[in-house]
Amino acid sequence: MGLSRMLQTLRSITERVPRRVWAVAGFSLAAIFPLFNVLGFMPTAWLRVGVVSLVFVMLSLGLNVVMGEAGLLNLGYIAFFAVGAYTTALLSSPKFGLRWPFWALLVLSALLAMVAGLLIGLPTLRLRGDYLAIVTLAFGEIVRLTITNLQPLTNGPNGVTGIYPPRLLSQGAIDSLQASGWSEALLKWLVIDKPIEYYYLVFVFVVITAFLISNLKNSRVGRAWNALREDELAAVSSGITAARAKLLSVVLSAGVAGLAGSVYAYYSNVISPESFLFMQSVIVVCMVVLGGMGSIPGVIIGAIVLQALPQVIRESAGAMRSEFEVYRMLIFGLLIVAMVIFRPEGLLPDKLWRQEVHEVDPRELEKTRQSLFDVEEGHQDLEA
Image 1 (cartoon, rainbow, N blue to C red):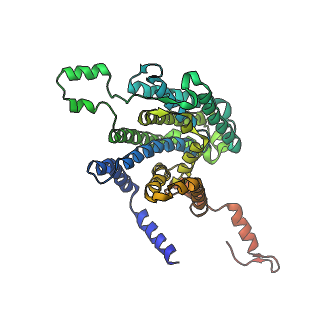
Image 2: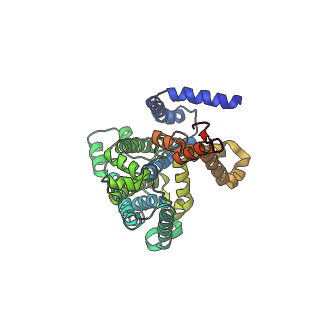
Image 3: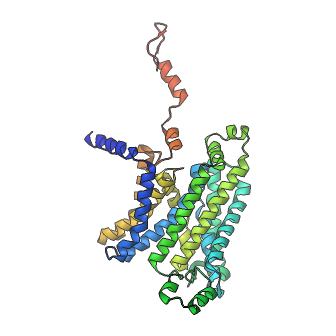
């Protein structure tokens, strides 16, 4: 009882603080996180964990557009991530001797992922619920198996190695700056090849993605997605084109996943089909559910918790690492089950989602009223 009261007190205190304050605090903490490594207070391994966590934050933000805003369950979301990663790997590696510009590859990876989203969205968005989930699951597996079997193009299970590090400017522009007298120390910052540089690169993309999705969420398009999620029949009756709105959510979320895949390919330097298993899609779905569907801050927290916490446990467990690997998915499952039971709206839910979860069904109120009606005496004893 004391613990419950303490948690309620803590929750009331935290809810009094405006969300903007929490957002600024989180942004500041994320911005100074690499400085702990520079100052020697944190090993480089933690910085690498931060980079991968931010990549999954981007993935979760993209999936939140489909799941949290439009209410569509996509179990093959990792396929769009694979499209972006392999586009970058094939066009900027020794595989074909190509080294496309960094910014061009980012755009191309996002566009090809959006095309893939369009191709899967057009024939399937008439489906709902479990049927849509099964079709998207199959799509994700088809993409992974296709990548595995196209050995002349993708090297099959061996993957693509030796991906070149990104250059913020073309080699010709860098040579021109060097000829103009720019110092080597400044020119080195134009080539991203260190964990701290990757961290800030992905951090910038996360901030831009969150900003754009937040504005889209509060726009007319976002309200149309929410209306379709709540009641598609009522939304269509009010003039919303369901197919177009759903397709837009799938395409935009696929573009975010493709962009994240491109950055991940540059960072990891090696891409193989094992990075895009179905379980990765499940983990991203868990991130969205855990943080709170429809809530951008919640999704960010959920992604960091599920991606960074296992790494923290691995580093802290020492001899228990192998045991943790065995029970990792069991821990994830128990965590999700506990969240569904005790806090179904997520860690930091969207206001609308919270109202939906905790609202009282009018039919239940009617049942309660009828049960409180005294039939024998013929009058109502208590009004619910």
